[in-house]
Length: 329
Image 1 (spheres, one colour):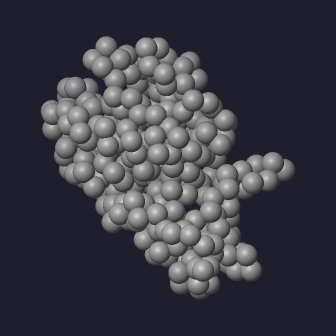
Image 2 (cartoon, one colour):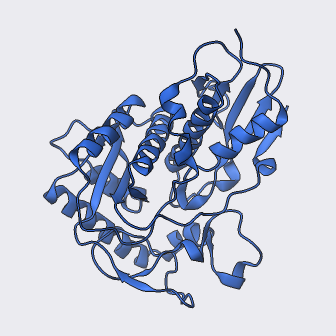
Image 3 (cartoon, one colour):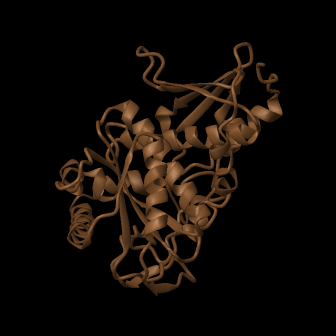
């Protein structure tokens, strides 16, 4: 039998879960529109939240929206609802990224439903992690999570990890010579009274994590040269656990699938007791992104570098109110 009709409260709850997803600099580049007559929810990109210097092709935007789409699927499964997802349903409307049917028949995905508690627990951690590897059984479970969404997860060996760390340092050095690129970052950094009021998006100073005093973990310092009163310093891990998530092809639909795979991996990692972080700095430059893949693996295109480990969970970053991102039809 068809699922019962959704009311405003139920739709709002689903979208609230969707918007807990990660996105580049917490820009939250999504909008939703509910069609009560058809029982479908549209996921749209928000062109006002693009980053022309860091993400000119909108790849990262699609990844963030794909992660939000996955959270929506998880929340629907937890509510006992199957979903019917169509990616990029209208070639004439590239900002319409997906349509999700919520009133169909069928059995909800119990495996997705089990991930629901992790949505509220998953936060990007910019803290040091312990110097210990991710166990093989956890690695396999995370790899399977990526495969379920049509993506691939690679745990690089020592030489590949060294290369990835070199790429991050290269990106940081280039940024120092191209200050105009920092405009896209500074737009989303919220420091103290400079920005005024409570933040609804971006990276607030309490989520910066400690200043790196040592170690080799690729942690972006959003404070830049600004001094944040009371901010501690810490030594980060010397051998970080880096993981590559990629896809066979590199088109918008692949980016949306990668975003869904990314969030499935992050939620599985959270339930396994891992702290998680995303490291996209070097991937923002096409030549370094090309170098990120391991030529000995079958990975086609690297979409994200993850940093995993055992340590302090990340801080809760702000989210826009649902009424700001949801249009009720």
